[in-house]
Amino acid sequence: MEVIKIIPRGFCLGVVKSIKMAKEALKKYGDKSIYMIGLLVHNKIVVKELEEQGIKVIDDWKKSRMDIIKTIPKNSVVIFSAHGTDEKVIKKAEELGLIIIDTKCEWVLETEELIKKHISNDYDVIFIGKHHHPETIALTSIDFNKVHLVTNIDEVNKLKIENEKIFVTNQTTLSIIDTDLIYKEIKAKYPKCVFKNDLCEATLVRQKAVLDLDSNKVDLLYVVGDERSNNTLKLVELGNSIGIKSLRINDKSEIDLNDLKNTKVVAVTAGASTASVVQNDVIKFLETI
Image 1 (tube, rainbow, N blue to C red):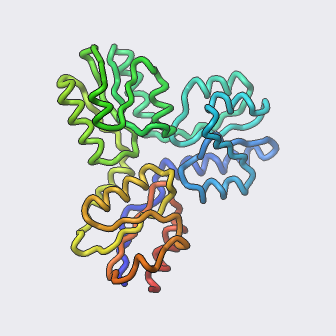
Image 2: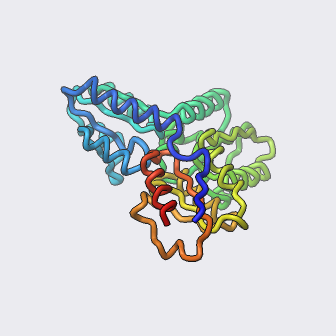
Image 3: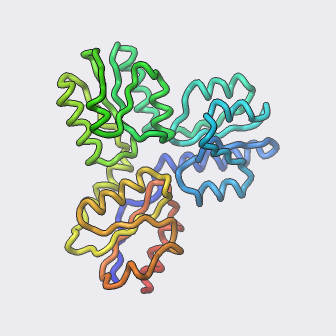
């Protein structure tokens, strides 16, 4: 069986930075309780490794991060995820005497600054994102009155913005194709809107690498990554969209040999929060079949 190793794949610089910051916190504050609010990155294998090293993970979907912060003992360390965090939550953490490690990705920070800049210049902002995603929650919380979340074309049609000054941007890990379709609908409704595509570079190059695959030459695509990783799920969607059977797996243990029957060429890529060792185990296993 031929195995195509798609390049690039796996960890992006933002994920590397976030993990590094978390590990540095373990060394620097070894005498304190260290809490991770939400998942540092959307990969349970990475998070479990940090948990085993002593970080207490609080990932309770039923509680807001504001409520969670209030339960953490004073002088503890709190690590905020790469996806970004509502500034009001960070401010409350400071007020409560917590030591803050904010691992926010630089691409998310750039989007945040753009949103603030346009709001200060009297714009309304349309944010293309995914409901309940931590990045979307963080960025729409900048101003709930001025930032309007849309996740699909139906929600665009329901918008009622009277302001002629409209700025459009998006979550950093969406699909190239989906973002473009929604933007075109927004542009048709609000012709004077200003658009800045903020898909991060890591997301773009990984998606383009999948879209460049030849469906006539590849029988199956494995995307190695967590089910909560949006950029991982989008790679699966894009692979299927160009006619290649595409499957998400967490690691090599989830490879079903039945899926490989009559398969001559399999391609492998990975989400931006998937460790190299996990991807390489998948590739090595496939090369032995």
